[in-house]
Length: 178
Image 1 (cartoon, rainbow, N blue to C red):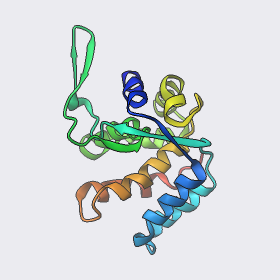
Image 2 (cartoon, helix red, strand yellow; image 1 turned 60 degrees about the vertical axis):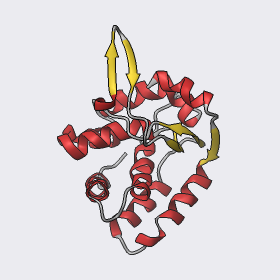
Image 3 (cartoon, rainbow, N blue to C red; image 1 turned 90 degrees about the vertical axis):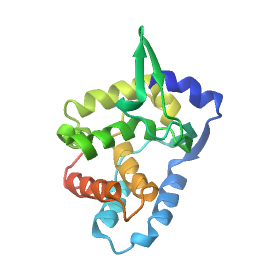
């Protein structure tokens, strides 16, 4: 993911203040107004420590192990058909969503929220390497993952299996304190 930093900067990074990003998220989720899980997630997000701002740029959009190739120590990203301007942190969260959706993920999102291994170690490492580019801080904020899960519900089709899986994951982690 460090290699993507240059890609983001080349394509222009635009900053969105977190309060604006959360307001947009809330507006985007209005159609699910009666959904208790989403409403609990939004209330939890309001009480959660988040970075001051988020970066948007051209992102890969479908980053996961199947779209990575390593040749002679060089990493190549394949399959750019889903590339679009989004929050940069999505390229960090999406591979873990894929893992949860299709491989059972070993409760990685729970460890992000609990601040335990491996989630805390992975999140801290990501923040140190690319956090300045993704959310203007080298400090890990587990709330980024909550924001990301809620944001994913605005990207996926509500009729689709991945929306359902993301919704279930959100319901599963909301009781966890951090």
